[in-house]
Structures are given as structure tokens and as C-alpha cells.
Image (cartoon, rainbow, N blue to C red; front, side, top):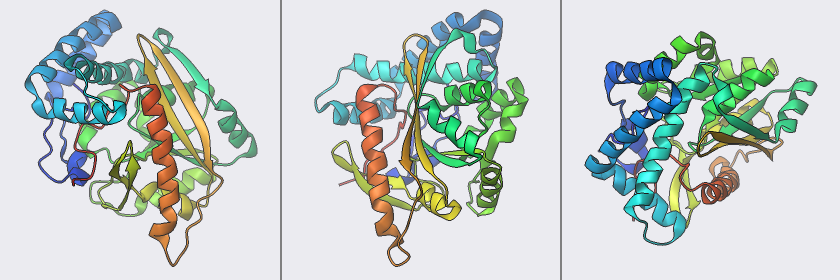
Amino acid sequence: MSAESPSARAENSPREGWLSVRERGGVFGIRFVVFLCTAFGRTAARLFITFLSAWYFLFDGHLRRCSRAYLERLHGRSVTRREVFRHVLTFARVTLDRIFLAAGKTRAFHVEFHGEEHLRRLREEGRGALLILAHLGSFEAGRALARERQFAINILGNFHNARLINEALARMNPGADTRLIDIGAKGGFDFVFKAEERLNKGELIATMGDRVGPDGKQLSVDFLGKSAAFPTGPYLLAAALNCPVYLAFGVYSEPNRYDLYCEPFAEKIELNRRDRVGSIRPYIEKYAERLADHCRKAPFNWFNFYDFWDSE
């Protein structure tokens, strides 16, 4: 169903939940979806994905529970099964669109870029920057538009759990793989030097800000009214690189619209050497507030299907 199927059950702690998720469906399933997209187009593929989403919705209680927990926290009320299914279906459709976007088939989509002037200014000045993303909507839409507008965006992340679909996407667009910087499941610091090298060329580094990485470094802040863990890595990296930071979100709307948002976050991240953790907190709180605002505007777009909030 996806690079990171929401149906995979996380048996470990909420903070490690997403790291335990594995690809489901295997090579055949992913190749079949790619075949549908190639042979019959987006309409036929979306029909198949609708039935597949219904299967996951009916038979995966963990998926329904995680979706319901998020939606009820967001809305402050009980939600219907229809709303939960719509959440799952939105995730599936956005994931499906990644195949078309990676293949450069962007004519099927209406994409609006809000805040493009920030990236243009950076390019004119020859400066790089760090973009902090979220599992909200589609970063693939942003990557596709970046290629068209000639913005050099490198994606920094842990790609261990998404190996199969990333390989499929790479076959459709061989150049995309060169823009991936893998942190690696075991951590390490080689990625910092790679990021610095590309940043010095005036390129952009993008990383997710709403999942704790394999190093386990995190801080808990309020998110939608309850404490949740967010990674400290993006802010430590920005401080080390001494670069400006922007937030970027790609919000999906039915049936084929993506609104890309880029907004200034910090000219640079300054940390107190005596209290690095404490000085990171205001940045994470600001990020969580902006993420919550986008979630409220597009409630079915956030795709962290695991036990996200801290346990009591």
C-alpha cells in the first residue's frame, strides 16, 4: 500500500513505533501498483487503491485506533468510522500520487506554491538552507515542483523502512536517488558532512521534524493538547550548519490539488552550550504549533499511523 504501510503493528514503545514499521505487500504488490499506473493511468489506480484502503480499514484494528486517536484529539470530539476511513484513503491516494510525481507526470495535478519567493531569494544569494518538513500531505509534490523550478533540494532521512518503494521510484526517475542523504538505521555522522557539502553549494537540505530518529534524541512538547515527542536532530543539525531554517508543507486536496507552503522559521538556530536541550525547546514548540495549525486546516493530511503521543 505504501512505503510505510499504516497497517504494520508497532510492538515497541510509542517513541520507537514508526521505526518498527515495515513495508507490506512486498515487491510484487509495489510492482503491481506501478503497472496499474503505467498501463491504465491514475483513475484505474485510484479505484484499486480505494478497495485496498477498505481492506486495511476493515481488518487492521491498530490502524483504526491510531487514526481515531489523532482525529479525536484534533477535533476534540468523537469521530465516525467514515472519517477514519477518509483519513486512510487520503493517505493511500497521496502515496499513489508519489508514483506519478516521481515519474514527472505533473500535468495531472494542480500545484500552487505559497512562499516560493523565499527559495528564490536564497538561490539569488547563493545560500543554502534547511527545510523542516512533516508527514503531512506529500513532500514528493514539493520535490517534483522543485525539479521544474530548478531548486536543488536534498532529502535527509532514514530510508531503511521504505527501501522497496524508493527503489521503484528511483527506477522511474533515476536522478531522484542522487538527492537522498541517508542517515542510516544505526546513526553516525557521515550525513552531516554530506549535508554541509551540499549546503555550501547553495543547495537545500530537507528533513522531517515529526518523527524521532534512530538516535532517540527527542523532546516532548504540547501537540494538539497532549505531550508528544519530537526529534531534536533537525535543530542540532541547523545549529551545526549555521544556516537559515524554513518550514515546508505539501497539503493535498481532492481530487488532484497540492498546496505547497514555505515559511521562514529562523535565520539561524542558536543553542546555549550549557543548556542545549532547554534552548531547543522553543524551536520545537514553534514547529509543533505550526504543524498543528496545518493539521486543523487539512485534518486528513497527517500520516503518522502509530502511537504518537506520550503514554500517561
